[in-house]
Length: 134
Image (cartoon, rainbow, N blue to C red):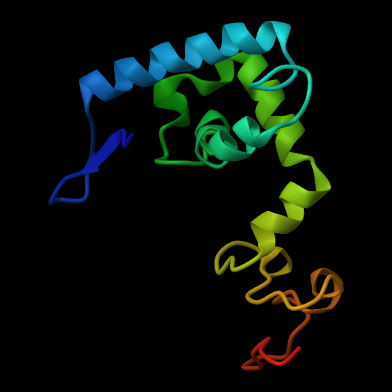
C-alpha cells in the first residue's frame, strides 16, 4: 500500500482512503501488540521480518516524511515493537548491507565476509576505493 502521491510540483498528497486504512491497521496492530511481544505472539518470527521494514519505518516516522501527520508516536505498543526489532543485532547489520545513504559508518556497499561489518563500511574504505574483492 502506498500512502503518499507526489504531485508534479513536488508536493505530497495523501489518499484519504489509504490514510484511513493505514490508521485503522495501525490501531489494530497496536492493540494486538499490547498483549504480544511480536506480531505472531511471544517470539520473533517471519511475520515481524516481513512487515517491519515498511511498518517499522512508518511507525518511527522515517518513511514518506509523514510521522507527524500520521501521529505515529501515539501508538506506544507499535513503537515498542519497532524499537525492539531495530535493536536486534542481525537487523542492524542487515540494514547496513547495500545501503548507499546516511552516515558512512552505516553503509556496507558489498558484503563478502562477516568481518566486512567491522572493516569495510564506507567510513573505513579509502576515497574512490570500491569494496569489491574484499
